Image (cartoon, rainbow, N blue to C red; front, side, top):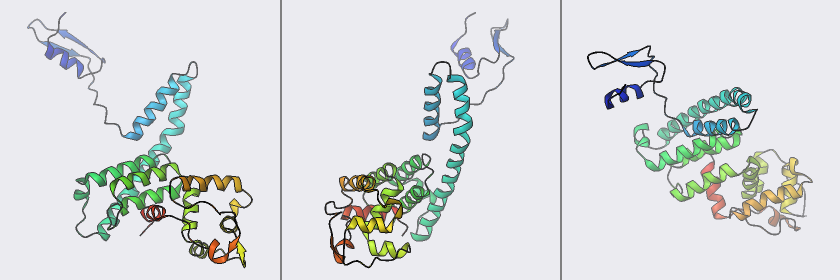
Length: 262
């Protein structure tokens, strides 16, 4: 039986849940066909989930059960994250409308730079459960349209930093931006010291880092390598005005401003 292009098109629009027969008059009849809706377009998160499912399916023997387990374990939390982030995104747009005259959702949707920033932040948001990073991403979306916002290249770079850093990276950077201010804001009493080191002050302020020099040195190295804070002398004793001084760079200050609520 031969089918013309029109018939093949009609068969392609349906799954093989039925069959096609040719009637005596030269037409076609679809029997037992069930209309199957088109699959909705996938988001970046859906694509990532599909890739992981495909990778697990390729593993011999355990592929089938592992895929089902992945769906049970990852599926519902991932969907919950998406829904919660959509609420945060809507709140960010509402905040922008309050802060910037003339801003509307329609205008934002036609702003390629804003859409790119929002999409990039959203891709990062669904991959984390850490509230400090989610807050930073929400603030970045709002700040991207406020006066004095970084240029597009810097915005993209800063979002990459939020993705790559841990909350502790960002906390340490914030601390060294203004040690006295950070301590006051977090209820940390200033030690009565005439001599001390910046690292020693960090340990006093963040007790989870006390005695863990190798660990927090690595975190500070990450910040120094990206040009966000100055290095050297972190463990050197110095007078009070030295170990209480800011150690963030202009780029580090700009990054903190971009991810902080204004």
